[in-house]
Every structure is written in C-alpha cells, then in structure tokens.
Image (cartoon, one colour):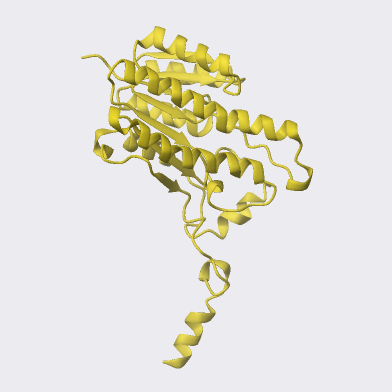
Length: 265
C-alpha cells in the first residue's frame, strides 16, 4: 500500500519540526522545508528516515511565489502525491502601529499570509487532480484572537489565516478535502531565560509553556481519520491564555469575589 505524504513548511526547528516528526511517526513520508536553518532540516531528515519512512529536504522562501511552486514541484517529484499540507512557516516581526513601515508590513504579509494562501492553493490543486481527500492545516497563533502590544500586523496575518480556513474549507468540502487551523500560544521553543515572557506564563491558568510536541500531537490528530468530521474550524492550544482574567480572578492574584462569598456564609 502506498504511503501517504505530508509537506510541513518551516519544519527545521520548533513547532514545525515536532509536527514533521509526529507525522513521520504516524507513517507519513515527509517533506521537510527550511529557509536558512539547513542543519536543523538535515538532522530531522536523519531522524525521520530512521523511522522507516521517506523524507525530502527542500529549501524555500514562502514569501516568494516562484519558490512555493518550486517547493511543490520537488515534493511531487519525490512522492507523487500529497495528502497533508501543514502551513507552519512564518516570522514573528513586531513593531508599534505608529512606526510600522511598509517594508515590515509587506514582509510579514507575504510570509505569514500570502505564502500560506498560495501553498494551500497548490496543495488543493494537486489533491483534486489525484482525487485525494487530503487535509490542509494552517498554523496561526492565539494572536488571531488576543491582543498584545506591537503585534498589529502579525496578529492581522494570523487572523487572516484563521478566517481563510473557514472559507477554504467551504470551497473544498465538495472534494472531501478538510481544512483546519491551529492557534498555538506560549510554546517552549527555547526562549532566553531572562525573557519577560516567563512572567506572563506564570500568570496563565495552566502556569506553564506548552511544548512543541503538544501542538504536534494535536495536528497529528486533526489530520487523522479520527478527526474526519472536523473542518473549517480553529483549535486553540494555549494553556488558557485567552481565558478572561478579571481582577477578581485568582490567576491575577485577586480572589475578591471568593473572599466576599466566604464572609457572607
């Protein structure tokens, strides 16, 4: 039986690397892509082929439309089919709204939004051509729903991916192709120990970073037959970071309402 094949963009490190590994462990042949981190991609390649599946390493800049087409050409030449696309490649540039430059806007938009759009389009075209009922997973961010300083453009691109997921799922449903989105939150990708992000994590409901493996396990489930009735939706994996934390909430050091209730009893 021919093995299924999955293409994971931005898979030389971090969340993308864990996703590619999880899909290889699930029996997929895997396309590993990198922009500049070739060493990480090659390390993952060695790990993946040791599992008994095939892998292909492809250098790509997803902000470039010709590069996207070349990436798919190389992937299809290697595997002859595509069953899963994970749109993970992205960059996290930030700047205050009042000083955001057109160059930063264009760089973020072309990489995090346009790149995902046209990668999904080419994947879907290949799936339809081969009558493959595949799955497209867009990796966005909880920035699509929450608000953080200096992230106006970044958050906008992630919100676009989330909304795109719905419309794309609607159009591709007739071909049996599912489209889903994952919004990771605070994930341990090797932050410096003095990064202020640790203070924010300590105040979250679950009180810790997520792991890249936890995001990868979610993606592996979403592309599996067990999730065969899930499409057009976004799943947030952020440890409760977006849950309301009003001043009375114990997660912000309050607990005023609870104390008042105890006093009245």
